Image 1: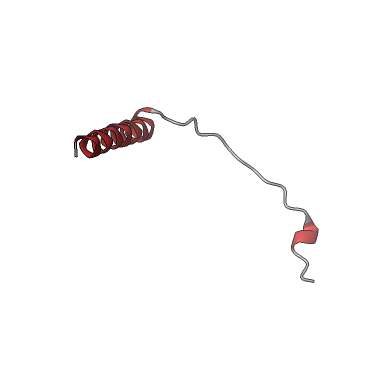
Image 2: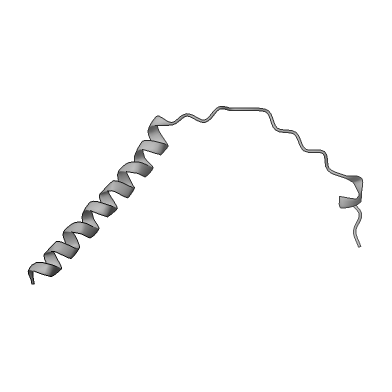
Length: 48
């Protein structure tokens, strides 16, 4: 039984680290906005 608790503790710690990393990326990293433009070739509008 102690090995089960150890396994669950390790999984909980790993999950907490992953969750903390995702939270930090979502709240503390600001992406740089930039303008995007795409040139669509005319043959994309022709139905086959």
